[in-house]
Image (cartoon, rainbow, N blue to C red):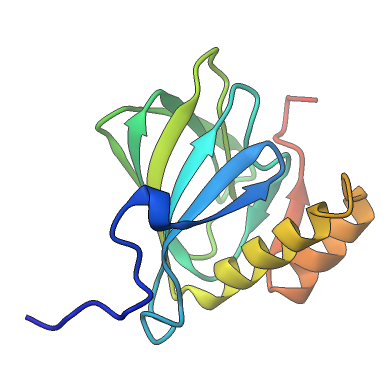
Length: 162
């Protein structure tokens, strides 16, 4: 068995943690550690947390909800949107290019292990967005520009929600 790279965290207390809006991201495996193949994270999402807009990107994702519940909104080919509640112990795979967003619509903190592949788009955006937030709450225009720079297409709010 190969050894882990020296800078691979072996516990959550060793993981690099970044704020992303109200969410917290712990980086478990970076693109540097996986030759760009994956970006693996632990997401801690408080009530009301999650990306505010529907979006799509080329990397595929898979989420394993560890605690709480997350609402996944998935765009359909006919323009409609499906809401799928994913509870602790359940897994949600998302093919690349799928219009989606994820929200915590409960009163409890939710946590999920997530993997993005290939990882560069999501790691680049996550790090840049966290950096942008160090100067206070970024404007929506700044976030939209950052998403565009990283190949993430923002599609707008979930239809039927404000």
